[in-house]
Picture 1 (cartoon, one colour):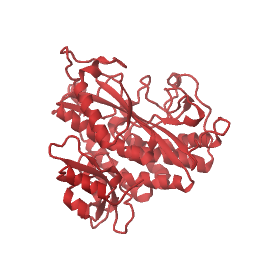
Picture 2 (tube, one colour):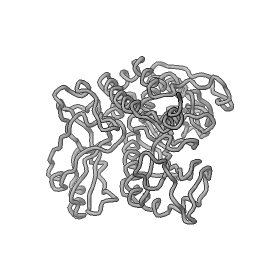
Picture 3 (spheres, helix red, strand yellow):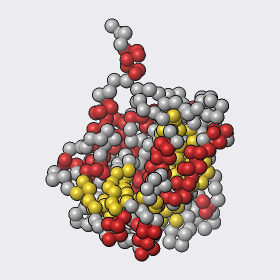
Picture 4 (tube, helix red, strand yellow):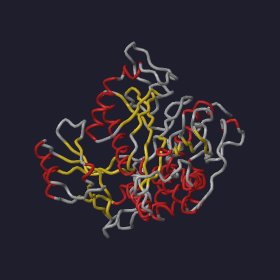
Length: 450
């Protein structure tokens, strides 16, 4: 639950810990941490901070869409702290705290441009039915040497023997031990930030890892994912490492996903996806039907950059369509084997580069539309869908994904026209910047052509 007033205990903690400043942070559409820093004493006294409304839709290249997408007069929003998220900053030398904020428009409503607003609005629709989504993100990422030159490829860090990983050392412990200092500090940071981690493993790529977060309330898990990515970067810098959440940082190697496990419980805590006799409910199948119908229209929210689509390579456990199946990792919508109380759906489309607030909002929203419209899913896939020559049905570029999103009203139905138009405007700016680049491939193969 959100908490909009600081408690006496929190104020006392800030004072006793000699906290000098507090970061008032929020995630922009790319998932980057934005905001302002306020002296702790001013926060305790209730000082209000404002920031330009447009910051929520700042592009990854630092530019902004046209004024019409955030207000011709370039207005402010209020940064309203959610004090339930007040935590120490683990990597700060001088005691500092942080708190996740909502963006509030002048009329007192949630700014529709802020990703946290999008998720809160979807969750309100669930609450109106007496339901609560339960989610669990799985995050994959690469750890590389410090990387200052974007013209150079990423390189796995040197390990105890002096060697560098070449990949496909999945589920081993040796590299986890080699990077023990980093992971020790990361886990201490997670404890301080209230991030509930679960399993962690070495993944398929060289120095690629996965850490799962424990299932829970969708807003809390989105906040935790946001803070987890922030922590990954900062702890990495402290160890002279670059931690990368790109979907595909290395050619020929597996990409990094952010699989989203999701279920729904009613007011009594019962899993909506299961009947009393343990069989799957009608709502379970309608939910899958909604994912199949609407996820393709929302692909830019799961795959937000041109690089995102490089992850979808047949045979590397990345989906190429929205088929569904039980315990099948070749499909886009997987149903893990479980008991009735844990029946859930796993959306395998998002990359780790996705904004957790937006990807959760889009996935939960698509499933809810399926329930509301009583949509039926296809027959479950059996076997490996990659063996089907016609398997790929999702857009394979960000340009195509944005065109598909613009051609349907799904995003508007879920998030409103202002957010939908602004998000596509952000992608237009980023794509224009991307298409103006000349790549090493072009220099390598085209320079000698007549």
